[in-house]
Length: 152
Length: 99
Image 1: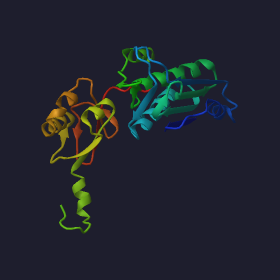
Image 2: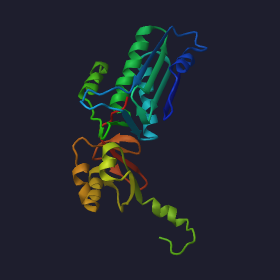
Image 3: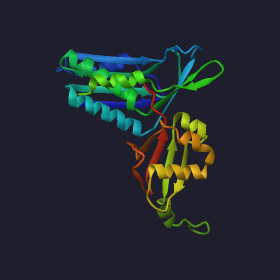
Image 4: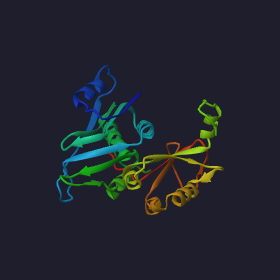
């Protein structure tokens, strides 16, 4: 079982990450990946970019712990979590989660579990930049509610 | 504290009387401060330490007393009654918004 965690300012290549998850992997029949992008927010003004900051050290530990929790619940042989920080323009990639498993259900659920926990626990903060102003993004209750489905 | 310019190994020990405090996100921006070092003479709870900060920086009060403010002690999420000792790292921040 392997876990790869990376917090970086640079962009990532989904194809490369997908290949890494698949290469020399004869036991897994399923790969599920999720990519999050900077989108326009619905709050009126047009967002031109996002700025992301994090708590170096704690963030990586939390992501590692979320991946380990996912591996205790599902048989996920490989997990890759990449999260970008810094200044990101509209349409750029923010986050990548990729998991492999023998069968698809575990892979789908595991990837969703990781994203739901990342949203609620990983120490990142987003600021929206508009043409003439900026605004810190508020925590969404809907993200908290999303955790409900994983509580046993 | 050492007198003069010579490097005194005791300085390292005296640093251990401090708590390193970090601020992130909107809180950092409001306080106009990302980190500071606070000297403590005895272990304090996180709430007590917050009061110390407010007495030292009264204009920080509304932001430090915000109900949703979170704290992490040595990079682990912590409740306000946990004990902070010299040498610890304590961070305050608003709810997270990554992903």
